[in-house]
Length: 216
Image (tube, rainbow, N blue to C red; front, side):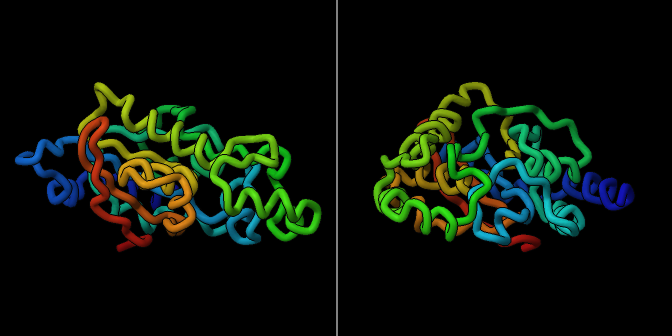
């Protein structure tokens, strides 16, 4: 597996894909690649994540996908196990970035959707339809979009190309913010494990360039 890490690190640092992601004429000189973490038990069982590690075999999948990622100047990740283990396959220094932490599901963390639906159907219904709802006592979808949007727009001196490993919900929130869409649109963005989403632009003016399935 160490050889796989080295292979991934070598190839992700030398990919020429990054050049197709710039558009200097329009001033789009900042590129942010949002790499969704690998599969976990929470993803597999439709559960609200707690701090699960990657599934068995997910690290090998991440090693295979890493060479398809564009070259970047820096890598950021929150401190969750799933994101740190995904980022580790790049074989690079990873900066801790608390603003990229996953959605706080409060008392629902670690529970399956079916379990919550049986115990609190009204709360789950509100959460699924109202972006301001937080029946679990954690963050609302509106809170998440605002937090991630502040992270994007607060990058006053960012590296020109940054890769951020994050939960799917964080990636979806970044897309919603970039498009200027309402928080309800978060449910309309599909982000698969190990997919890469590319935003280009500058703080306050982002464009969605692509959402690439794993390995594409």
